[in-house]
Length: 121
Image (cartoon, rainbow, N blue to C red; front, top):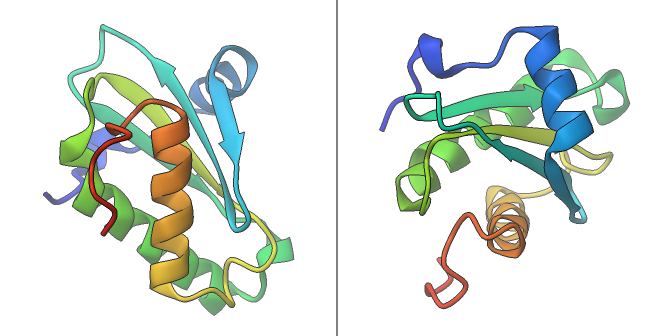
């Protein structure tokens, strides 16, 4: 599954709405926030990587990894009509892809996006 441009969150109001009325779970390397919206056609994703993560190439690497996680595991969502925001925490750039994936999946399960009984990767 490739993430089309139309499924990207790019309006400040959408990010603010997810932050104010959505649910979030924090892990070691990331914070995963979500908000259901029946009017959406599918998952609308947004990634936040601040300068605290590291230099530009580190932030780009983290964003690419987050995008890959949504591409891999997004089809497993029980209800794909939602906003999904992934916020990188300090240390995310130093983490391996497997560590990020485990943390992302753990938060997704805690939020009820993926079945808790599904086997880990």
